[in-house]
Length: 99
Image (cartoon, rainbow, N blue to C red):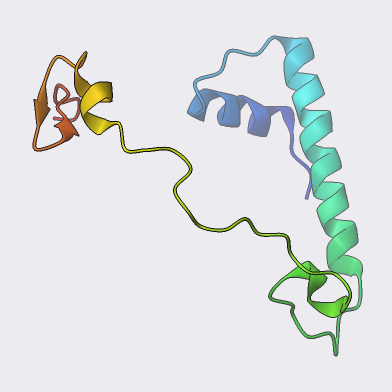
């Protein structure tokens, strides 16, 4: 897959970006480079390879270092909400932004 300058212009328009001609060309080169890498990865023969739940699942001596799931700070909800303009039942009230 190869993007053209018109593709980059459409993507920039959808993202509400204003790109100069040089920026547009650099973006096209970078995105096409990304797609080239994806094509190389797709070309690898993976028949007979089972998907892994985690990349370290095949390495027996590697264990994930997960921290304990404990609260490290006290609940300061009331103190944090004192400066809020509007609070109701422990929640910050904000103006409606979606009509």
